[in-house]
View 1 (cartoon, rainbow, N blue to C red):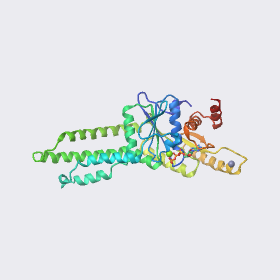
View 2: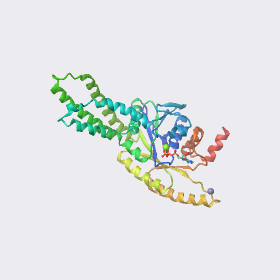
View 3: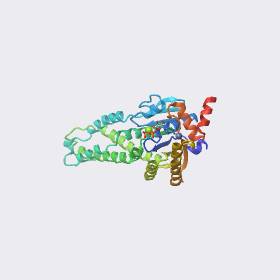
View 4: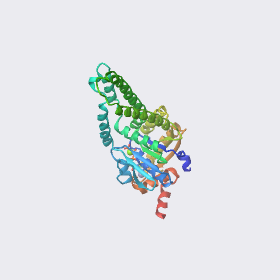
Length: 334
Ligand SMILES: Nc1ncnc2c1ncn2[C@@H]1O[C@H](COP(=O)(O)OP(=O)(O)OP(=O)(O)O)[C@@H](O)[C@H]1O
Ligand SMILES: [Mg+2]
Ligand SMILES: [Zn+2]
């Protein structure tokens, strides 16, 4: 299969790949391997993670940090720390608090709106990931962006983010318009400065417009796809099945299922043979449940998959159909 069959590219636009699945199934390793493979195929690639455990840094065996960093030719990586993002967000919220003065708010249920506003403010990690999404979507500075997503629940929270954000911005706008009524009523009494307000209003409108665009990009199968990682175990299969159902509700297109950690058929070991048989049964279930998806397989490696070389091998196994042995032989010949 060529790169065009595996990934979407749209002239002049960035495309997005989300890698998701249950905890521990190999999302980070597969995201990292995918990003390296794309970079090696001359695509300007960004990989994004919001895992506070810094698993992406561990996987690449290099410190990444909160701003996109070049880690090899064509490959940039960013690791958002939700705590840092949270601090930044709270700073911004503090500034926004001045929007409504409780005294002005009296009798106009503005206070209630503001409380509502504060409690519905989006979570910091999703907010930070979404900010990167918006930024990249606007600049189109990468060919492709790979999101190493958190386990399924968080991913769904991220995908519901445009809705959340939209209702939040909507509320902000509502509060502001009520406030401007107050202001015009008391204009002669209280000297308000209108300039900042107008700017803020424009910013909010602009944010709203961008969110709408993001929603379009995320639900366009030409621009955004989701790769579901699953291991041949019942829990993982059922969680992924539910995940795919939920993704459909957000109009997100799942274009492949990647079965990871598949045991080899070793017939001189009872233990391995027994594990192999159970897995094969589950692989049958996966093929049946996800028959309308492209299904790829990755064998269980002997060692942990860490560092650029191992990740590159993983990419070749995954996207070039090479066996682990073949990849290792190639590596020796080089
Ligand atoms: N095919 C494989 N063969 C051997 N080891 C693997 C394979 N895939 C993943 N691993 C190992 O399994 C562990 C978990 O993988 P990884 O961190 O990629 O999972 P994850 O889905 O990102 O986990 P989390 O949900 O915690 O973010 C890592 O130590 C990784 O090296
Ligand atoms: Mg991970
Ligand atoms: Zn064995």
